[in-house]
Image (cartoon, rainbow, N blue to C red; front, side, top):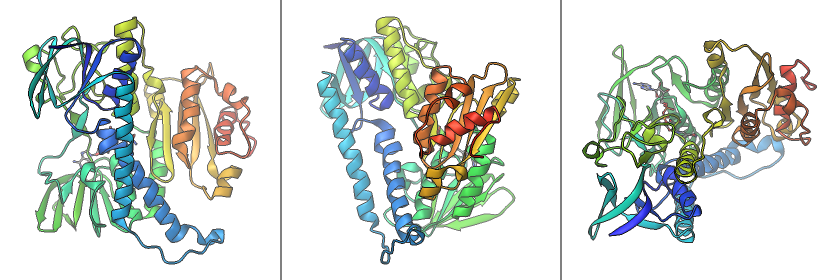
Length: 461
Ligand code: NAD
């Protein structure tokens, strides 16, 4: 029987990155993954394909209406959706091939099949050729999550779909109803709006992007409305019916909306089915996430879990950090994730980047803070690029000046937020950022200016 120091079940960012780290530490490692392509939801049907479509649809929108006032005349723009999808698929395949290469380079054994824990030190892999047993000194469950749905809304894998379907529509819907104004709803709603779809977003709460700093989310709502997304907030969906190519979405109060496709984006649930958790006694919480201790160990010694399957922010980079920390704790005795320094990015236009505490969280915790805000409109590079929407907001401790949270809505916020994450990780004060020379003209100067604004001494506003 094949024997390993670590068997990882799930080849997504949580699993394959942990496997590489364990291999770097000299351990024998196997990854069990039921899909041919490694990379998990993120690579196959999540982060990467959606970003390919966001980039392409942005270019299409720019070419269609974004160039005239820059003195660039192009002919009539036409869309070849098939080619756009092919580009996306090629990106996914190429990156997937890259992960296969990383597995080989690190001498990690890959098993293609469904993994199940049959005993605390035994993983059974159901492959096309039959069942194979792997003896494992340690097991890591990194099986991720899958889209949730609502009572009365049955996913049919076609007209009523999740993000998986919405990254692969074979034609441009006339009218797409998106249920849920979270990250997926807004990103994929944006893709299809740009390609010509009327997009209606139905959200249960009276705000979009729950959990995000309210001021930034409110600004985002205004911008997205201006771009043409239609929002119905405080709206509870009670059911969806499909009749051939048409859908009818019922909402509380008796009204309904007709459309040709529905995207259900109301959150995700843990992938724990068929893993044999009950038989070995791995505990889950009442929402179905696997419970772990600070070392990512489950209720069973030697069985660990990381990433979406343990809950918290469902982000590829959070899963990666957990996978690495778990492996390092296990094999070196040290390893840590600073949950306060995990950035979040929404890849709309403008992008939203956020790290650390929101203003609402600081108020709730009774922490005194000072706030510095700087608008993109007052930044030279933003003006030159036509990126007038957005702002940077820095929240710093009122007595120590330590940076507690940074929230950005604006062009390239997803890249800009890295500086803020480094600042929080290093325990920087807003004065540290304010005194750091930022190249001119760059969008990053908005962060320096917001840091100056904490002390009411912004130069350009
Ligand atoms: P989400 O939790 O971000 O948003 C779901 C939204 O649906 C919420 O606003 C919620 O209030 C709303 N909702 C719930 N029930 C509803 C109902 N009955 N009617 C109307 N609205 C309802 O979930 P998501 O957008 O599906 O994303 C899933 C996960 O994937 C999230 O954790 C997200 O962070 C992650 N993700 C991240 C990125 C990124 O980092 N860029 C991209 C995609 C997904």
